[in-house]
Length: 333
Ligand SMILES: [Zn+2]
Image (cartoon, rainbow, N blue to C red; front, side, top):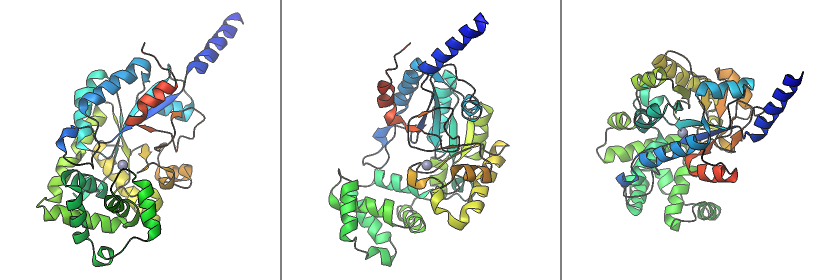
């Protein structure tokens, strides 16, 4: 009776001291000095290593299995914990895993799109990043306008769109902000895809070779799984799930089948591309159940607690880590 009472108190105290689980996401992990212009905003491998050391000094580094047991079954974590995730299946992630995660014993989740693997066609988002990072902004603007289909080339932004561009891209000159707005908010996905392929082609870059240099292949995904990491779904071609329409079932089945073929098992986790509210399924539970996922992750919010729906978990970006840790006064142990 007495022991039972004591253990209950201890559990209560531990719970009170636990913030829960912090999912931290990464995109590019490479040397920022490779690029003359803005477009790719990587974290350097050294900064990545320092962030892993910082997180591991004050949090338990959860494995994907531990995180899954916590969010699905409320199985307690030893203390406040972090889970590392990577979006987009970039080659950077394999190097990062080999050089930094594996020696530190950290297991991560890698969310992968399938089109680069099955069709050797790059995702529009990465073609835009690359082209912008390699091109002086005015030249980029001219090249883009020249490559656009005629109906878009002559399309003038309305006064309202120009105002919206100015509000969104406060650090850019108006003409560059308007180009970003056109790329990110106005051009239909298929037009963006086509125009960026044309721009690569104009530079003599073969898209198949671009894919090989940008994305992990099936064998690499298998090797990550074999080393205790987890491969998750991220859609076939990185379209927001809210924009898949009638394509949704075919498109998700393709992503799942490609990853299952590479790793030997269908993915249990999904990361919604873009991760913000506008890009999340209207009913994440229904979406996950329909496609066979147990866990879905977003890019909103901060700490995950067991009462959180497992189908739309909070997750932060690497550049938010310092703020979140200082908010909660975590100290090095
Ligand atoms: Zn993504």
